[in-house]
Image (cartoon, rainbow, N blue to C red; front, side, top):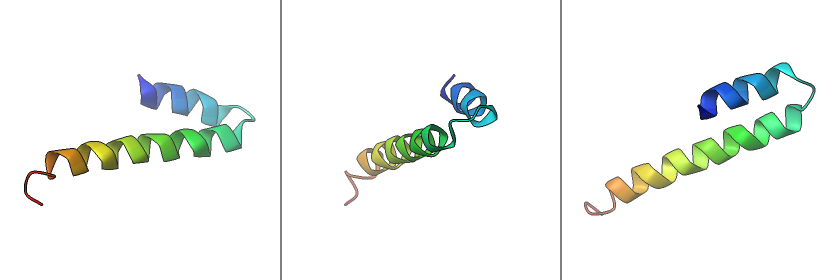
Length: 41
């Protein structure tokens, strides 16, 4: 659902919002990945 929202935003004129959205998703993905591998570290 998040990807669809970003896709719709990218079709609009809000390029900055799209970049911010991608940055947020990347941060959440990295955060969840770090949390999963946090036990190893």
